[in-house]
Image (cartoon, rainbow, N blue to C red):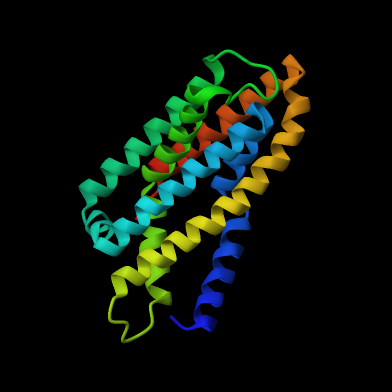
Length: 207
């Protein structure tokens, strides 16, 4: 891949990542309600989910899912159901102090798992990678699948950095929020509302 083409891909990827969207908003709410570590670990889980979509696009799996109305609907409704589950969990789980939301291996793994599953069960992300990555595979490339995998992992790497920074700064503010039980509860309801809205939007979406 030529350097100019690679830099073009990287620039577009950064712009798409920093553009306001559900992923950014979710990382921000995690930082505000759980702290820096939770937001960063959640972001890492979401980016690892991108890697799954990259492999699926390169291997043709995403194209099969997109072509099948049943498969697309199955993944879509599974993703919506998981988002609703996360919304309810946000309201029912016990509140913790600042910096303790993702403490310990179990807490960190739970945050990572949430971000990962949320991303993997979103067929819109799969469609995005299926449409986005091939645009940067040059004509005559002897290994287009490998190039797509490489580009997908580059996209995931820059997303880790950007989402990590977003999680760090939102978590810094969240540290003050978590010190106030009232504010913490308000932001928990806001997070649940956002997750519920995402679930409805995903369930009603079409290909």
